[in-house]
Amino acid sequence: MTAAAPVSAPPLAKLDRAAIEAIRASGRHLLVQGAMGIHASDGLSGKVAACKGPRLVGVGTISAVVKSDDQLLREIRRAKAEARGGYVGLNLMAAINKAEFERYTRIAIEEKLSFIVQGAGISREIIKWCRAGGIPFAGIVSSGRLAAMYEKWGADFLVAEGSEAGGHIGDVDEPLPQLVREVLAHTKLPVVAAGGVVASDIPGYLEAGAAGVQLASRFLACSDGDVHPNFKAMHLGRTDDDIVLIKSCVKGMSARAVRNEFTEALAAGKAFPPVSKSWHYGPGGYHGRTQPCIECLAENICLCRESDFQESFCITDALLAAAVHGDVKNGLFYTGSSITRIPERDVDALPSVQELMASFEAVLAAAPAQRRAG
Image 1 (cartoon, helix red, strand yellow):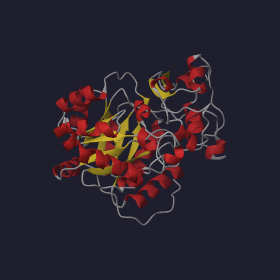
Image 2 (cartoon, helix red, strand yellow):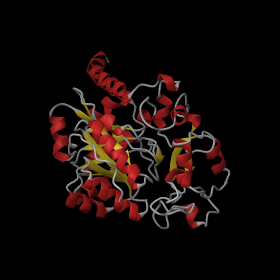
Image 3 (cartoon, helix red, strand yellow):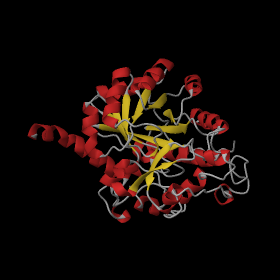
Image 4 (cartoon, one colour):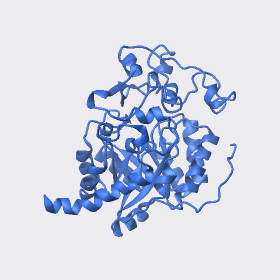
């Protein structure tokens, strides 16, 4: 592993069950920035983690999706430098190549991140690795049954992700309010509500018993972060007609994205085989894989690869086109249903992370008065 230069920064705090319970006992809750896509949420996690207000504690999450070791280490160490000793975790998908799944877990443990959160499949093995490495584990759940399983296996907290979420939602068809109630009924672990959440929704989920909420699309549409300005612009001024569910190359799962020429071509049955990614990973390729298909997904999961590239699409190409190149025609812009409720219409008017967090605090501060008025 090639190590990026270390940074001088306070160590990150562990976000385990005891820490969350202490935060709740102080009258505060978690405000989690959800990780999204390839580089889509880079540059956000440390800034969110540095925010600690009277009602909310910011929690940043880094996406490990298809990053080289150097790319991931740079992102982790930047976040640690910006977090001021706050909470920064790593999001992992069980559906990725097993070699990278293990590699990213090891990096998170070595870097002493605050937690690992994992979805897109189930891995009991990672919970054992986290326990051995002294890092808290959180499971992304879509049912009360899975929540109870994760509690039994030793998770520290859970993220209940409803059908309104962005990206892969699989067979999840349960609206978030209903899912949160179900999950809370099946576990005593702290639960974070995620999927289509905007500021005005926050008081309701906290009153229902959630330890916090997670927002992803809202943070993508802010002035901070590395994602291409066109990516941010694709989130603005959207209606329900601008959102579409596609059939992903990941086992044919349903996934939510912004409608564009790419999603229309997919719906018409057009295939998008992989192309060289040397422009992004260099001549050495992705972990030494220089072929157009870098085998980013676990075996027998990618429809494009399994069809010998005659069907579906290369997800890495599509996501890189969106986040790095800002290609509004050929990129894949995963998003949550909440983008229809983003008020800004111009990229230059987008708030910063700090301004967003302050607005969330203001919503919670106003909530008791609004209930009394109602």
